[in-house]
Length: 114
Length: 114
Image (tube, rainbow over all chains, first blue to last red; front, top):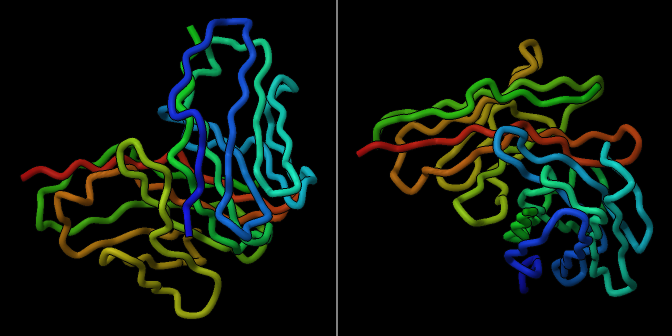
């Protein structure tokens, strides 16, 4: 089975722009979660989608949004980029959305905001 | 509120020496606990998990962890560290407040010296 695929791998944007990141989960996985990783902060939960519905959301401003398609692929969008949005954005998939399910991670998208 | 604390930002051990990474959690119900490892430029990979039963769990790559409810801890150990173990290690808890999600600690970066 192919793993979790995230595109693009690297991205450079300027303040005020918007960006869309893509995630293709492992085949058969219906849950996709998004995390923001910054040095010293660990992984901060953004949101989780299951069968095209947002099931959970972290404490991020409304500039961060996402969606999931019928084939379970997910996109995350950040509007009006700020310097503090520079981070590694990780996507993770799992078969179900229960709290005991382990996550399978992609390699991430490194976003730099200048 | 649910949280995970990893007190050590970074640890340096000599190759062949033993290793213990600390993790403390805060969660009101039965915790589902995980350890993940992240190699440079990669996503996270599950090392081991604890749901119930034997409090000493074995994982991949020779790692083990011990769950101690009285101390709210889930420390990761390895008897003899190899240079390839140099990576960042994340402790996590599966939570079910406001929907299911996995909450991560800030991570501990392990350096291995020859």
